[in-house]
Amino acid sequence: GENVEQHPSTLSVQEGDSAVIKCTYSDSASNYFPWYKQELGKGPQLIIDIRSNVGEKKDQRIAVTLNKTAKHFSLHITETQPEDSAVYFCAATYSSASKIIFGSGTRLSIRP
Amino acid sequence: NAGVTQTPKFQVLKTGQSMTLQCAQDMNHEYMSWYRQDPGMGLRLIHYSVGAGITDQGEVPNGYNVSRSTTEDFPLRLLSAAPSQTSVYFCASSYSGDSSGYFGPGTRLTVT
Image 1: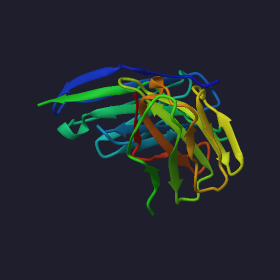
Image 2: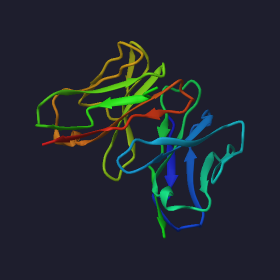
Image 3: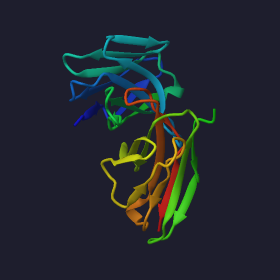
């Protein structure tokens, strides 16, 4: 079955710097890769996603890249702000799948 | 739309008691799932459903039962609560296997 590995488990960056979180997946059939942000005491919320027919997608300060050959995808946050502090989860699934497989999460802290 | 709703928000049980965590969605999603999240850990899939009348086990199903009699509702039953089931429980729904998932706010369960 699908397995998703996520690194690093914790990440601390200076406010204004960039943060990168990386994930690898095992099932070559996976074609949909969402990213979730979980703030303290809340449920995860989708922040960006990418499908396998594109290599990069950007939404303001957030971007996701996908390398299908290497089976890895990354989340890039530029110009980090205090409100970016949260736990981020990557995930992978495919069209006939019945469930989404999540990575183990990255706790991102933004230092003032 | 209310999205995904969960009740109760908090619950304390004694060992051996049973209870049902409620989950409902008003987005006409076919796919629904239950996850548990323990401190410092990621999301572990308990049970999932790909439509009314269809359920299946995730990675940690022991001690939990589910049923899906309607598209909207997906309750999770704890048969005989154990301290190991102390956790935060999240319900999620999605339109299909390769579409974004929407999470509820969570139920924080403590078993003493």
